[in-house]
Length: 170
Image (cartoon, one colour):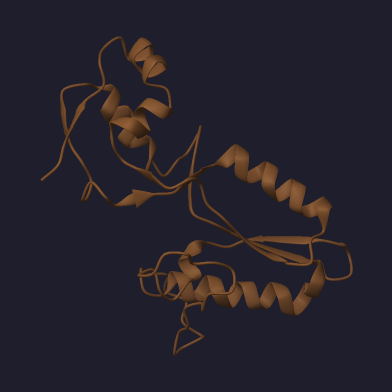
């Protein structure tokens, strides 16, 4: 609220975790968001993270109105990622040998490179679209040999000087 009169734009980085239902494909900005029965809850858990992010989106819109841009990224990946949620898989594949795949072979992931996300936010800031909430995810991909190939199998093999791991599906 202190920034309300001091800026002509406010970007809030939210999350796709705000969506109430992930069982159907095609989730988008108009899809329902998760709610919590206790809006005063402060413990961030798997069950409260999405609803709390949705409440933060509402707060940003309440204060900044049309000057607020809400960005809902999916899995953010790229250099210097401290969470290791995606980069671990890349390093593990580069280590060679056999590697147990995470989940069924038809379960896609949608990572968005942090650099692409930053560019998209910057572009949205200056384009001033009428739609002020954006979901930003990457291309649907399977965590398989093809994905590792697209992210640079040759470069990975050269960097680690060995073949990539063979994925094992259970």
